[in-house]
Length: 199
Image (tube, rainbow, N blue to C red):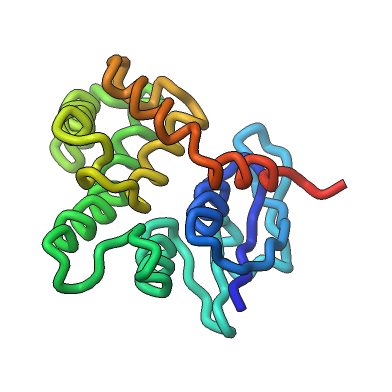
């Protein structure tokens, strides 16, 4: 049994999307988290060690951090094609993009959003927004999705950034077409319907 601990309009929303793409059976548990405006707070029911989301529990095993959850789920459901299997020629690129998302995209976007991108230490450690934009745009100019012809969990990560704030991805028609393409996916519509507190 899969249980996803979720807070609406947070990073866990993209995991709902991935689970819906997989057609997986899962239980959704709503928890509170500390919000940027100061509202909310830690929830004792949340198994995440830092009381953040997403947190995924599978048969008693806890997995946290979005990219780790993406890798775990795509390995758990290899027949969905949402993550290349070991031995697939795209596996290396898939792992690279997962690590690049966590290790570069998230820090660069956060630093840029906070208005601290001019700091030379940050640029030296993670690069800059221009380089990040070029890498994503280069992938999308070469193919309809980040890894090529097929939609994967990497697209869930990249596209979900723009669903939260369009300015997080480069302003380019190629990106607009990509976001339109992924925005029409039925699994995303189902996920959006679940991304709120039950009445």
